[in-house]
Length: 312
Image (cartoon, rainbow, N blue to C red; front, side, top):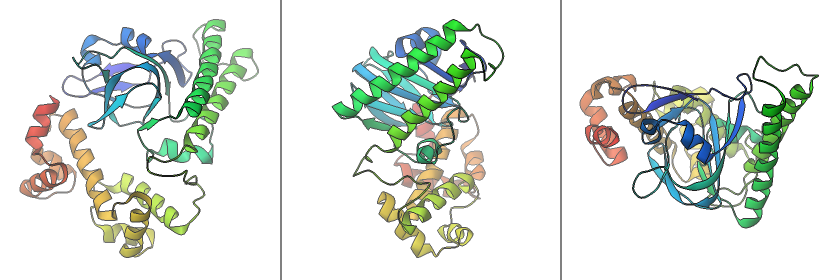
């Protein structure tokens, strides 16, 4: 990982020190703590890659997109590119003493598996509590990934991309498939509030398909429009159909989802940049600073200035 940035949130780009051209790295939480500078370990960071963290022991608290997540045995965290995190810490703010495994991988490393699309899209939960039988299965999966990764690291010196027909190339291909299997296992876990939902690439009902299309459009356009009517028109549905689909999938209306996504982007910009509050408001489509200020306070329960001071 390569850290950049001077203030607030630190950008961390993917950089595998073991094998430069392999888009996957497997390491322990202790190894990550040793690698990171103390200033980085204590500050929020924004990743440009996926990070899966499986906690096997110990305890701490992680922050992802300004929400705290307790980490104990059985916790599985999935951070997606662009999300802001603070590494799991103890009550004093120091990096936690965790027995945990991390999988760091680029968006293009896993094989193209429709069943895992929601996991990689960014619409699934950040944190999960695995029941004992699932924890056992995930521990076996990450142990196998770690063993194959060590094999790739130890057998071949760092260098250019490994030819497909070589042992190293075959091991890299196997790592992709093992990661794909892990993502499918993650995709079939029950949702936080109910039983397993169908994979979004093939939704079981039109409502699920409408919600997924809306979430993808919202990711693309949240900085340019907050109008549910406009989103509905772009997707070819009525606003009522859009809202009904969102309520069925999330318990929140389309308008609530729009406001939450815009507020999250505002929080990221407030924490990550030194842009004036008014400039952030303009970047998110607010023509008047007062309107942005009222929106942020109503949506988050605090002023933009107070939020920025807390993060800094």
